[in-house]
Length: 109
Length: 117
Image (cartoon, rainbow over the protein chains, first blue to last red):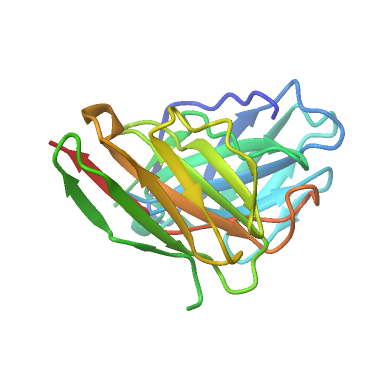
C-alpha cells in the first residue's frame, strides 16, 4: 500500500465544511484512495473511495488531484456526530488495508 | 444480520487463559479479515480468509494466535495462553469479493475488546 500522510488532528465548527487532507505521493497507478473513519469505541466505517476521478456519495466528497499525489475528503456540513478519527489509505488488489495514524477530527458547537 | 457481528463485545481473561473471539460476516461475503487495534493506534492486519481458505496469516504475532473459518462463513480467532500484551480490540471485516478484485469496500464489525489481567 502507498504510504499516506495526514495531519494528526483538526477542528471544525459544526455546520461548516470539514476538509481533511491526505498526501500519498508514492501511490501507484492501480491503487485506490480509500477513506474510513472510526468513531470512539466502534469499528472503522467505510466512507468513500476513488481512483482518478472525484467521487461523491451521501456521506462525503473525495477530491483527488490530477497527479494523484494528494486528496481531500470533504464533509459538507459537519455535525457533532462526525467527530472521529479519519483514515486515508492507498490500496490495490491483493493488499490488506494498512491504517496509519489518521486525523482526529473534532467538530465543535 | 445486515452488518458484521462480533462476540463477545468485551472479554476479560486472566493471563494464561485461552480465549475465542467470534465473527459473523455479512452473509455471502467471500473475504474475511482480522485486525488488532492497540489503544491509540490504527488497526493492524492479522489474517485473511477467502471463503474457508486462510490465504494470508502473516500478521499473526505469534503461534499462540490461531484463526479458522471452516465453512466459509463464521470465523473464530483463538488466542492461547493469553498475555498482557494481547490486550487490544480485535476487529473483523468482510468484503463481498476476493481480495484480488480492486475497488471494493470492506465492512467492519464493532470489535471485541480483550483485556488480559
